[in-house]
Amino acid sequence: MKKSLESRNRRAPAARCRLASAVVAAAVLALAGIAPPAGAAEMPGAPPSGRQLALRFELLENEHRGQAEFLAELTLANRGGGALTGGEWALYFNFGRPMRSGSEAPEIAVEHVNGDLWRLSPTAGFAPLAAGEERRFPLLGRGAVTRRSDAPAGPYLVSADGR
Image 1 (cartoon, one colour):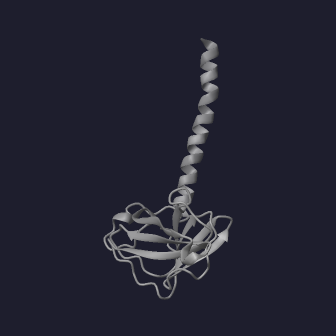
Image 2 (cartoon, rainbow, N blue to C red):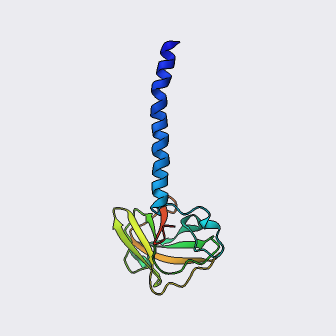
Image 3 (tube, one colour):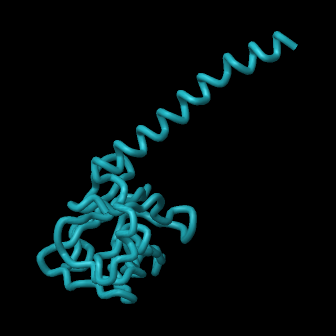
């Protein structure tokens, strides 16, 4: 009996330490503006947070124009209560195929960051994406893709206000 109590007491401080570390880490992230402020998503007319945007990939064709390239479409949908305007935001995602720079719509820029990480950001010509609206952007890339296994993965929104 004494041995089991000692064993349990040795584990308890480690578990409390892990919990305290997790709480401190969450607080630091929130104070740094990395996590959205509580209730921000519910504010009427507020720009959408990353959770309120949907991204859909659709392969339109491989061997586009008889070339070894693909034509696809990214659809960005605003499920928030306010408009997504041009400005200081970017949508990052992983995509394992090379894209042709400048092949996208004039209101966005898609740039290769590193490895399979890409950044989609608005240009000066970006018209606000109203609440409930969606917009399609063409993408042209080298090679061929499959519909599901090559689709962009892990999208996340980065904005100047930390939302």
